[in-house]
Amino acid sequence: MKKETSPEMEDELRPEYDLKTLLKGGVRGKYAERYRKGTNLVLLASDVAKAFPTEEAGNEELPVAAKRHEEGSQR
Image 1: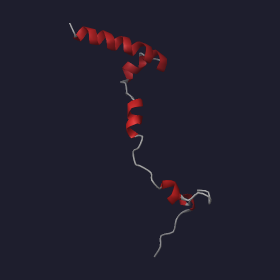
Image 2: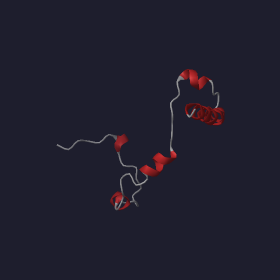
Image 3: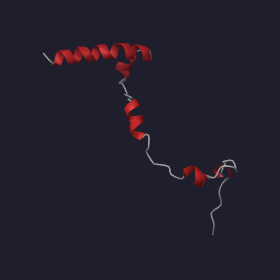
Image 4: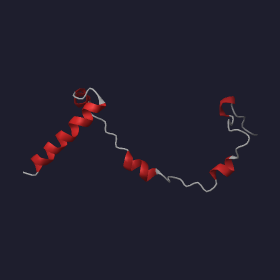
């Protein structure tokens, strides 16, 4: 017995596109490494995040704090 598909699951791809042709020669994870290199998200603790009201504030102050920390650990 064949399982019926719900209307939401029906293919919305235009008839002129052949999915088999579109996927032919595709490489899984082709850009994964490039994506990882360009993405660095950090979840800050809520009390730390309150110190930086905007993204710009964090981007200005965190490198300064990191440099101070680095200099202090080299002494």
